Length: 350
Image (cartoon, rainbow, N blue to C red; front, side, top):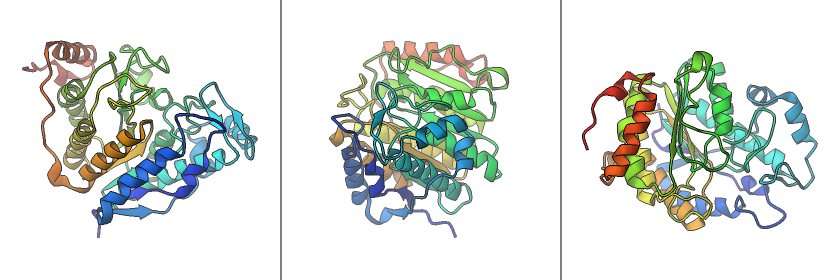
């Protein structure tokens, strides 16, 4: 019998990835996440973490890159200007990737309906052959590959609401039609990818849905894009499971981003995705922590998101109404993707 409590990945070992000096991606982030999860009480249940296998990692990363990471074990060094490796970082990254794989497999097999993974280090910037942007291993991409290889799932939707574009995840799947990658992100901004004309290639043309947003967007803009672009595309795509790169650095308090999403806004985005999961894929949805660097905002936003996952009755509230510039933004983005998604040609009323 399926346990309808939200499956949660949490473990003190995710704090072992620790910078030698001040850095926004720090262990204290998980203290904030843990406070939010503690408040969820009996609405959640814990999944014990486990390390990713070489086979799971090699589905996304080159052997030469994994060998280079292994050479970092026990050392402190910088892997790029933003990304560090501490003595136990590689072990921690393997634990994060493997734990997300396990959570996704459990949900796919019906042992749970929803899952939230409070992981460090994050993953959506990691490329096939390089660490990047605080990320060592591509957690969500690795989980998606495992689902395709080891379950009967054939269509996966990945939604990335982190303030930064998930370049690593996009590059892992941009040639494939059966993995939809949708990203809302500040643009132009780090890492410089995610332009509107990046829409996939070869067989995957159209299955990359980039929604580059100007600085200052908040609940109204994100909400209009969810309701009038992401939700219609997801309905058409009919995913069998939804994976979410859940970064909370688009929050109005975040020191790295320039967006104005509120705590409630993140809950509303989670509501929309849960509703589509209920409609299209038997409720199956898995969220993985990415960014979010203001500790109070992170705690509140994770708490609101997990609250929505745990209680379906909270779904269905409305976003604040968008103003005229927001409607223009939504219209332009819909038009850019409409040649691949005919449902986006339908008239939307303000």
